[in-house]
Image (cartoon, rainbow, N blue to C red; front, side, top):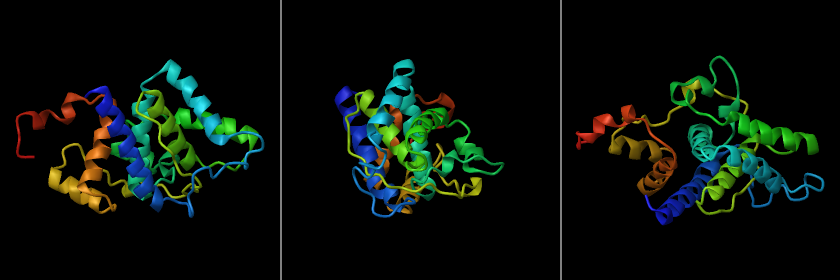
Length: 212
């Protein structure tokens, strides 16, 4: 994928996520700059960006990790950070989420903000801001995000309904349509995953089978 196509794919894909999936998240009246003036003298988005920059310098692959985390969080019940909750039967324990990583990055940003303005910034918003910053730092273009979400309190593995890697195109379209997303949205969102790596075992069956 060329650099130009990569920028368009990543930025466009997650603008779609914010506009559609985030609209169903745990928050009413989302807006750009929601936290402006709410965290003493600190700009919340700048603070999150500083944390992500430090992580990104050490490990640029966090971009792929955060992209995947946000997609896996938002696709279930909207962008409510329910994926972060621990529990014997939480979303974290679902098979589709066992390889999700980057939780410690969100926790780092949360600790910084809690030290300055406790109980103000939601983890759901931190995921959105952190992903945006990681994409930008990887050359994917910087887009505007809306904030003002509330964190979810329910996290059940049984609610995880992410399309499997082996899903057919028609079934994938249906899965995204159930979330209010079009086939074009689906292509952009799944295309955003190309910033990372994929294991051969997940697509080997498609190399020689063109019927799926």
